[in-house]
Image 1 (tube, rainbow, N blue to C red):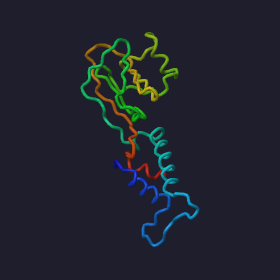
Image 2 (cartoon, rainbow, N blue to C red):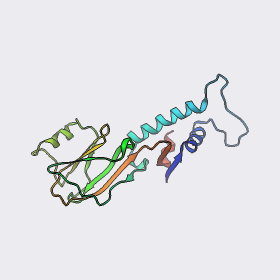
Image 3 (spheres, one colour):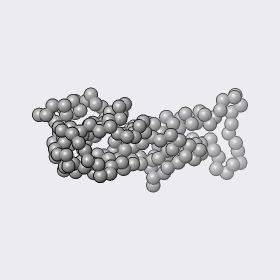
Image 4 (cartoon, one colour):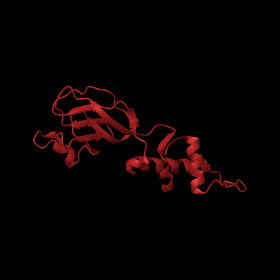
Length: 175
């Protein structure tokens, strides 16, 4: 089941799973050294969530569909600036209408698979397309590109929005 929690809801679940919140409320946990326990727990929680978004299997995440009926211009490759700002963390799936399958997503623009796309003789084909995502520049290069009529059929993006946590409930077992 996909969950979307606010920061306070996530903190309540984090406290419960880490053993700092007693369900029966017959005991309390606190610190007397002047350190805010919630701040420490929120830092742990944010680090866990960041790691989850970057490394977890896609089944544990809640990707958002961003594709509409968008004409994709270009020749040989398509470089598309994502209009997601800094919220895009990973690309879960991408497919153009001219492709026979979903693209293999490469997240390192300097990897050998990404560098092969720069030359027309080693570039991907419609049978095995490649999408190169640059998380720093928030750009997506799509290979190959055949005609000006190709539409973006699928673009599922894993996002990290401020003060919102979206993931599958089974990911809570990883805490």
